[in-house]
Image 1 (cartoon, rainbow, N blue to C red):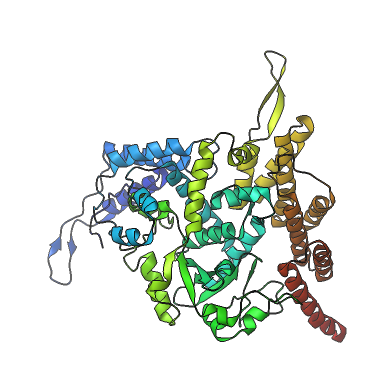
Image 2 (spheres, rainbow, N blue to C red):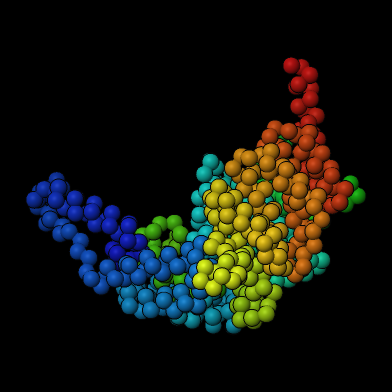
Length: 557
C-alpha cells in the first residue's frame, strides 16, 4: 500500500476544516509540556500544532466550491459537467502534487479485460465531463443509501431495502415496445426520469450497493445469456440473486412467507442444488425461464464504467478520502485505495469461496460502458431525444408579467422538475411535495407540450411523496386519479402506460401500509386484468396465502 502522506487539508470542506483546526488547537493548548514514554522513560517531543498555509487554504476553498457544484441538486441544473471537469483539472494540477505515482497498478488488468477504445479512455489524465457526472451520481447514491438503509440491521436487509427502492422508483420499460426506452441513460438519468430497462435497474442497484462496498455482478447462464440475473456478493456470505425483469428476488429458503414481499433471496448455491427456488416463480402455463441445470455454467460480469476504473478518479478519491464513505473509485486490479483486494480479486475470491466459478469466467458487462458512450453522443446532439427529455425536467416554463414593460414573458420556474425529483430521491419528501405543485399548475397557465409532460411526471410523484410522508389516504386518491385519467404523451417521451401500472403497484403498496390487505389484493387483481405480468401473479398468490392464514386467526379470536 502507498505510504505517501496525504496533506491534512485535502478533501475537507471549509466547515469540517474549521472543526479540525479548532480541535487541534485545543488539544495543543491542553497538552502537557512533556510526555514520558513508560516503555523507555524517554521524553517525547511536543507535537507542534498544524499550520495551514495560504496555498492550502485556497486549495480547500476551491475544492469545497467544486464539490458544491458537483452536488446532485446543482450539476445539470445550475452548473455544467464540462465546466466542472475543467475546474477539477485546474484544481488537481495545482493542489494534487502529493499523489503517489503507484496509487494504481492495474494497467495490465485493464488491458486484458477492456476493449482498446475503453482502455485508452481510462488512460486519459484529464478529467472529462462524464467524470463530473460520475461524481454527482456517487454523491446522490451515498445520500440515498444513507436514508434508505437507516433501519436495516444487516447486509441482506440493506440489499432488500435498496432493491425495493430501485423497483419502486424506476418504472420498468420494455425496449422492444416503448420508444422512450431507447434513450440512453446512466443510473442518474434512470432515477431522475423514474424509468429504465431491466439493465438500467440492475446498474442502478449496483451503483447504490457500491456505497456500502458490496459487490454486484451479472450472472449470465451460458445457454440462456438473455436470462441473466444480478448477483450480490454479501461480504463473507453468499451470492444473492435478483431478477430485474420481473422486479423480484429469487425467493430463498429464509424467506418469510407471511411478509407481503420476499424478504430473503436465494443464493447461487441454492439454485444450483435445488430447482424448487426457481419453481416458486412459475405462473400456471408459463414456467419461470430458468432451471437448476441452467446455472451450472455461466459468466460473471463486473459492473462499472470508465470513470469508476480510471486512475484520475483514484487520484480524486485519494484527495477526498478524509470525507469518509463516498466511493467514487474501484480499481479493476491492484491499487492502494483497496489494498485488501481489487474488484477482480474480490470476485475471484468469492468464486473460490464456495467453488462456484473460476477466474476464467470473469469478464466485463458491456451494457454500462455502452450507455456511457451513448449518453456522451446524445448530449452532443442538440435535437436528440435525450436533450429533449432533459428540457422537460428543466421546466416548467411559466408565464410572468414583466413589471417594466407590462408584457407577459416566459421563463423557467424557480424550482424545476429536475430539482424537485432530486429532493424526492434524497428523501426530502415534504419539500418535493411542495415543489411538485407549481409543476402541475404551470400547464394550466402555459399549455405547452413540455409543460404537459412535466405535469405527467409530477402528478405521479405527488402520490409517491404522499406515501412517503404517511399521507396514505391522499396517496391512494392520487394514484387512483393517475390510473383512471386518460392521457396521451405528446412527445412520446413519457411512458404513461407503464407509469399507470406502477401507480397501481404503489396503490396496492399503500393499502398494505394502511393494513388493508383485502384492498391490496383487489388492486392487484385489477392490475392483472390489464397486465398479467409474472410479478403481479406471484404477488397476488403470495398475498392470498397470507390472507388465508390471517382469516383462521381472526375467527379464533
